[in-house]
Amino acid sequence: MELIAIESKSGGLHSYAKEEISAFANHLNYCLGDDPDLDYLLPINPDTNDLFMKVKDGVIIAKFINVIEPETIDWRAVNYKKGGGLNQFKIIENQNLNISAAKSIGTYISVVLKGGERGGNGLGDDQKCLFLAQKGGTHFFRLRVQNQSAEELRDAEKNPTLVLGFMWQAVKMQLLGSINLKAHPELIRLLQDGEEMNDLLALPPEEILKRWVNYHLAKENYPKRINNFGTDIKDAKVYTVLLKSISGGKCDADPLNWGDTNKRAQKVLDNASAIGEFFFCQAAEQ
Image (cartoon, rainbow, N blue to C red; front, side, top):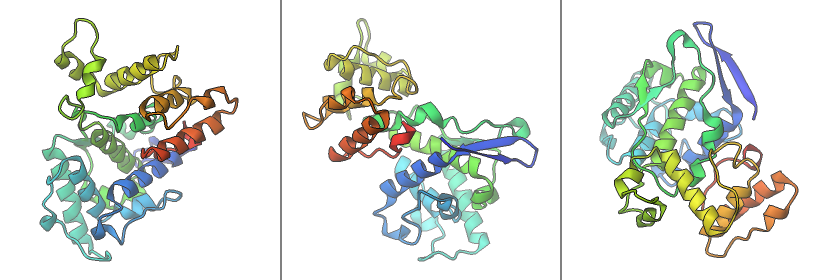
């Protein structure tokens, strides 16, 4: 993972990875790509800093907030001009609307820390769980809108860690937004001895995801269990077993015997695509 370091106005060092930009660009393209209002903004090029330029006018952020929580923002209140070209006043209005909307659904962006010090977005290990998170989640997460202005969102290319910090938390909240017994009655299978459903749903989302993964590993008689979404899944073997378990026979476990980890990871991506799952990180990032 290639890290990019930038110096803040206060002299602190902020860092982010090119892979983060790619992952979030791909995710926005996936979630919003069919929206005709965004024809002038999408697709975002995942191989450049295009993400920062495309979120500047606030329209994509407004649309994505409504993906997280439908109808949070009344589209009629958004300044929108087909093809772009909003003036600075209208852009600032949009970004203020986005910040207010984020607060209204209990979200906030927590990116600017005291003294301006920051060590990246914490994406590393957690990024690996986002594919798994598409299987469920509940509103355990809150995006924190704190200490930044509409002007900073408008000038996204000058504030990359703020934008990426927001995107990371927003995507995480979106993907983990539907863990409940009604949407996923199969969750009852994750209960341990002496637990009730409320005990399970009170767990942090990553803990539920770990249980979900370990349930499928046990189902496939795989000897390993995971304790984290970093080193425990880095070799893509767990993903290989998981896909075999959830694919209904469409994926096999042959890659477990391959010596090339990158080749195995690429096969995981290919298999995920084949069964209709979208994996927005690349093989080398696993």
